[in-house]
Length: 433
Image 1 (spheres, one colour):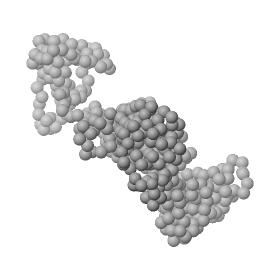
Image 2 (cartoon, one colour):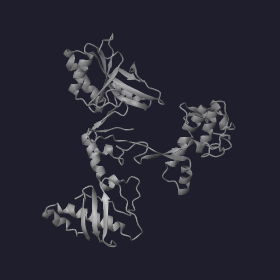
Image 3 (cartoon, one colour):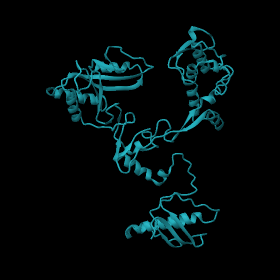
Image 4 (spheres, helix red, strand yellow):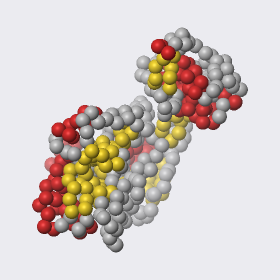
């Protein structure tokens, strides 16, 4: 018997008239023909039906009582048939999240495989993620920093905007004296706050000590407290008086975590679970494409189709000619900062100004909120840009079909990737790309 292909002999289901077919294994085979020629009869009523019947025959007699017996299709012989999966034809499901994996439920088993057998790697450094117990962390600190002065830090804020006045007051009330803000050690003072419009990293200094085996108990308490304050993550900042060969250099920051952690960059993951590998779950899908695999981005050439025009005459297509609205007042303030006006053609502006016009400005600008040029009517505000304005229109859910079509004319679709790297001969690994 030739096991390299499926051999169908004498198929007579429905419109088939003693059809003999050979279908090779490990290949994509397409069955085509006129309507009523027997395509579905061959694929579903003959090959799939026989594969399903043979599978059910492997069950015990007790189990078959619940499933019922399937009739053998009208065919003389089928050989080389392997286990079969059928996806219903003429489906009306147009959900973009539906794939072959979800329909056949293979997707659920793959998610479970990655969650249980996967090995995590950092998407920044490519190094394998590590996971320590508190006892292992203490031993590593003693081995690496013996005789050195260190700071035990607990991260509280990581790359987020805010003034954090309440956070500093809470830290001060808990009895902590120092914090590390954006890489700088500072003393916590009453009323202390930061620039609310910039991203900040804040770590609280749990302890300052010299690492020594005889101080293990003190180090153990500090590590436990740092883990509690940092929600499973802590840092060690070495501050030796002199550089010791083979030891961390002064000012070098190392991360330790009871969760999966990159030893180089300090990013950490929670233990993988099946929903982390689901493109239908907020915990698993890509934050940019929301699991759809493609993103709709604003095309700058469609936003500025004719750069010989000025803003007043409608150079920005989504906005049209000048109107007395807030966004035009913001644009006026932005251009005035660079000695341009609404009558200046876009082609005469520098690339940096055009970039800020489209994508927003990092600095707050002084905007007249009324038509009167008065200091009393001026406020400082952020300008987020025309691109974000158009994107916000595209994401509105209450738009009519005509309004949605208008917003989509400024967009271009691009594919987005999130790849699971697998090796059938080695460990299962995963990372974002």
